[in-house]
Length: 289
Ligand code: G4P
Image (cartoon, rainbow, N blue to C red; front, side):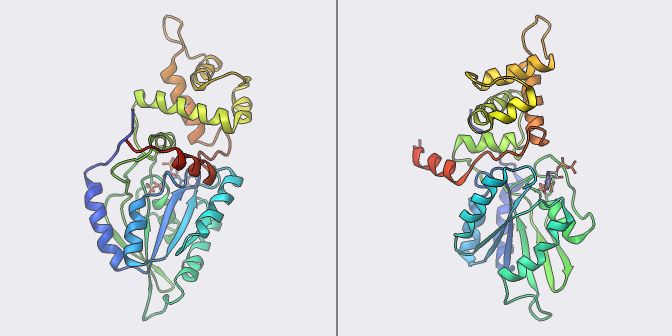
């Protein structure tokens, strides 16, 4: 199975974003710190480069990501031309207050009465764009929700201090190139999924955590992970939680859902699904079909 998700309004959003890019000085790109590359829309970089716009890249939800992996990503992105990367939790007001100052540092030629700094927040759904915008404006101006594509219309917002913010809808690239990206995005709830997909996503996540964070699985569910595979982990969750079907078999669907919830809520601990190294390995092994 490969996950594809591209609601109709996304096409219109792409067109609008390209138009808006002409009128902004800075792009604030929000990605999910737990999967910064999988949650980074290549279309944004293309649009930005075409107009030579600098980027303040916010690795958001850093409170849920592995700090070591996050630092590696910050170093990685800060080596890229035109990009200034920072790790934040947009839910923390003390983190968000840093954003205007950082934005001015990235685009020092703007931010005066005559030349206000015009900024656009971009990113795929559910990475925290609305949360950031609300925090910047210190009031709720956009719907915040844990369902993809809540933000659908474009708005122009005045931040004070000669800063203007254009909010654009979240976008996801029409084709997810690597199947593992689709699975990481679904695990992190950036793409919608049904129960059938959830079972595959949970198994994928369990396999990944077995490799990278077996101690977190042990701490949460109390089982030894040696010799386990992803399916066994989800079954182990079912066993621990007493999720059984009428005939006595494990309720794999319910266990998969619970396991994903434990990851999404942070109950499993601080986890990053990818690192610059794992990304490089993925790209090196990738055989386009
Ligand atoms: P979007 O506009 O990019 O689509 O994302 P949105 O702001 O709606 O945020 C999606 C979910 O991510 C929300 O969760 C939001 O609270 C959460 N979120 C945003 N920033 C952070 C952060 O820095 N850390 C953490 N842990 N979560 C963050 P939700 O479950 O719908 O809402 P809530 O119950 O958490 O308020």
